[in-house]
Amino acid sequence: MTEQGRTYVRPRARAWGNEAQRAVLHAIAEDIARRSGYRVAAVEVLRSDGNLEFVAIAGSPEAREQLLGRAAPLAAHRLVAFGTEMHGWWHIPEERMDDETRAWMAQYGHTPDLGDPAGPDAWHAEDRLVRLLEDEAGELRATLYLDEPLDGLRPTPESIAAVNAEVGVMYDAVLSIVERERFGEQVRMLSQARTAMQSVAPGQGVDDFLRQLSEAMAEAMPVDSVDVLLAGEPAPELEPDTAVLEDHMRQVWQRRGHLVVELTQTWGIGDAAQPTPEVIRRAMERRRLGSWLLVPIGMDGDYLGTMGLGRRPGGSSWVDSEIIAASAVASDVAGVVVGARLMARERLLNAELRSINDYRRDMVLTLAHELRNPVSVLWTHVEMLGQLGVFGPIRESLAAMDRATRRIEAMVEDLMALATVSDTGRDIASVPVDLTALVQDCAEFLAATAAQSGVHLELGVAEGLVVTGEEAGLQRLVTNLLSNAIKYTPSGGRVELTAAAEVVDGRDGVRLTCTDTGIGIAASEVDRVFTPFFRSSSFEARKRSGTGLGLAIVERVAKRHHGTVGVESVLGEGTTFTVWLPAAGPADVR
Image 1 (cartoon, one colour):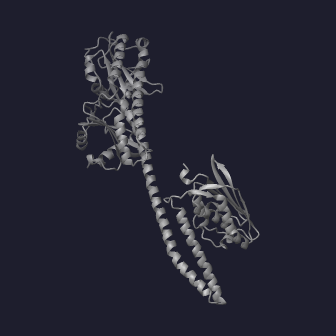
Image 2 (cartoon, rainbow, N blue to C red):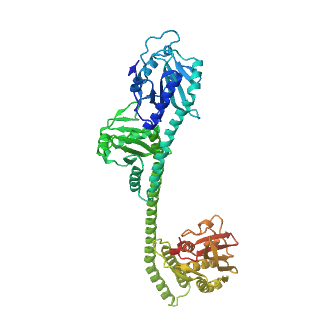
Image 3 (tube, helix red, strand yellow):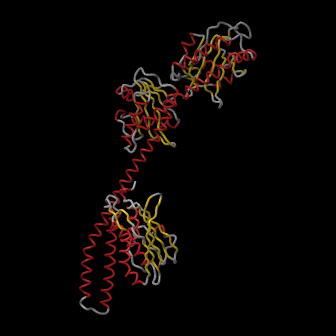
């Protein structure tokens, strides 16, 4: 309808509640009409789309035929602008209305045929009497109309007070039913959806997860199909209009709305119903759907996709409480989508990290193998030249070459050891290892080195210490701890290695402690000592040869055995390394 250049549109009809709730409200409307002194009583409910829908009309078959189930845009400002307030009711006299309001009333209301009013206080056919029903928070939930007073007179404060006294309890009854519908269906539908979500096994790819989620939700909820279309993902059934649909749904997401799609009409794009795009109509027909509720999925302002709930032709219409519940479900689905994507991203990153780690390990092993042969040849020739009895500068050069060759050989061995202990794909051959004997053997092996350096080596190892693990790796760990402590302790210093049983978090294990009175480590470098190839910037440390791999190997071996390693140091005073190893083997640790 057009009035003075303005077009009025009729929103989607019958979108609130079920027949049982409408029947209860109709009974209340009949009781109000019977007891209020008015022939007609009507109830309008405010829907989530901002429109008011007539859900109960008593006393006028003509009005019931014309308006029941029909909706109109909320326009409370018209009531306030032209009406007079009386004890919570608004009376809008016909003569106060402007032409635009008359046109609005004619489009969305009912005007009875009452004839000409008899007297100045007589009720006019276009008069309106309405009460705004608000919840405890002051939010409008419904409106109550009275029309055609039995005495034929306009209301007065006294007559309205009498109406309130007679039917006031009915106002709360209407609000109670409206609130029950608003929340009851939401709780049921949301509970069904969440139960379906919990039934889907986690850890799958995003596509498989969403497919199983859709199937579970369709089985648990009062719908015939559930689809989740992620933004940017192809949808063959909707091509070539997928991008157009996505653009529409982005706009719907921005205003936190929804679309109700039927085979011929779609609501939610603008104020009026729009023709359903042909591609969507065909997709619905292929899926044998009569209606589709499309709700955008998003989180933190980002549009993620669209959830579509479908019903077969002849199925129940989408009502307000279901739409509100669907929006809550979409919010849950958004969290599931984000979680699935993060999990998929994590799996991809882990795969990439494993690939990089494998490449690095293979490269290190290849480099070490390639270096080993020429180093062996070089060392052999240096020894042969040394046996020729050379003297002076040549002997000094050969000695320097011998030291360099030994250093390269040590680095090759450390590289191969680091690559081996860092290989997470390699199973540890776990066997019972006599750690008491192993520590004693390592200390005996390095005793000569300590003595040659003028370092006093002390040993305190408890008897009967046994752990399950890889003996070669554990031997490398203890040897590197001891040799590192001896290397960085000046002549006259002391290195102490102890081993004792210790329970940590209820688990039996062994604590190794290696303490030296050496040069110590700067506080700024303590956290980096387990990094491969790290060498201290200290002049005292730089004077000592090393590859920077020994402590990295210690850490890798400890972690491979599900143990821990720690370090405490004071620059210029000494360092203490501690390693705790569980008595149970890596395969037994959960």
